[in-house]
Image (cartoon, rainbow, N blue to C red):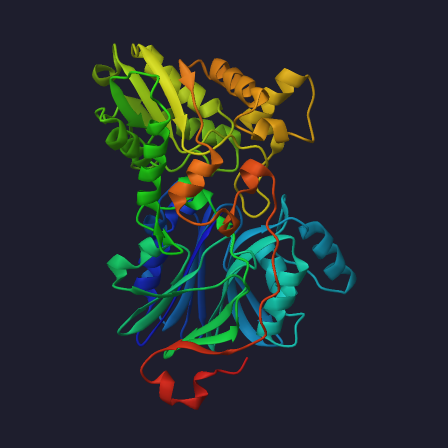
Length: 493
């Protein structure tokens, strides 16, 4: 899970790039990277695992000068990657996951292609994407061939003299949105990067669409396909509250999720409604609005220095963050029956040990847990989200109940089945809570406000979206004032 941002402006773009990239800090925890192109490329990568993006990059702004640039906050690997190719030099950032990376690396090695960005996890996937792209006849064809070769997903920004190539993955799993202001064009994973940088949304890229962004506007290199199954988890957890995806705001969806949870809770009587900070807060607010019960904060997040406990790669780091960032308020907790809205239960260990335990230790009378999505059953195939089937709380419950792992878990996916109810009871007992009630798939889909076929629900249902090939048409889809009059707006690859 990473966030990417790019900008092309009439003047120096470094400050806009700096702040636009920083607004993606909620999506990655390991590395930040910027690349600006002026007279030459200027690229900088820093480890941001123990510090904020701004503090690492503020000094770099003084030497970064150019009118176009790309940035990234990365969950695992160092980016941007620089490559001097037969198409000329370029820098590239990516967001996604490549499930068949080892197979693709092996094929390229046999062709004599070498890799320089290698860690204990293997070849840097962004370098792999770059090496796949240069196998094409030009950059656009190379991106298309990369899309065909990979299993998983990849959205990218590629910076060269022509401008910024932006390509959204073929399933539309990860969003890319273009913004415009009087002196600049930008492209982003998160629209929350736009308002304070004075950008207005110009268009959302379609799945598989490839565009070239230059000083004058947008040139469409390849049209998008008809399959759009964007990740549902963006609205439930990973996205920022101020961001919109497919024109649907995240905060509003979370409020609707909370309302749906409250409508199914006619059989409990509570004193306080709450949400686990930060992403659980809006779910809790929606629950409070629907139920009429007061929203209070029994657990508060000590914001400076503590990011998400879900995204770091090591369990030790995740647990440390989960323990230290949430501080209980005993006067709010003691003696009260509390509904706790949470975005999801992935492993369940952090919720159990660092949220629920704090509530009981501070004298809560009852603790009712309400996740805003169904039980997670399958590791994500399209991004660095749920990592292993053995980590998932629902699968742990199924193993305990059945005595072994199961390939067919369809009965446990069905929320009306007896096995589903037994599984939820097991998880509730394991967490040590008074009651546990998950959101249903249908209620979650309704809260998001897109048709079920327009969402990726793989984490919950195991049903994998299928992509259709994009159209071959090209053309200018949105341009600036000068670009409409100039034939050279179609910058050659």
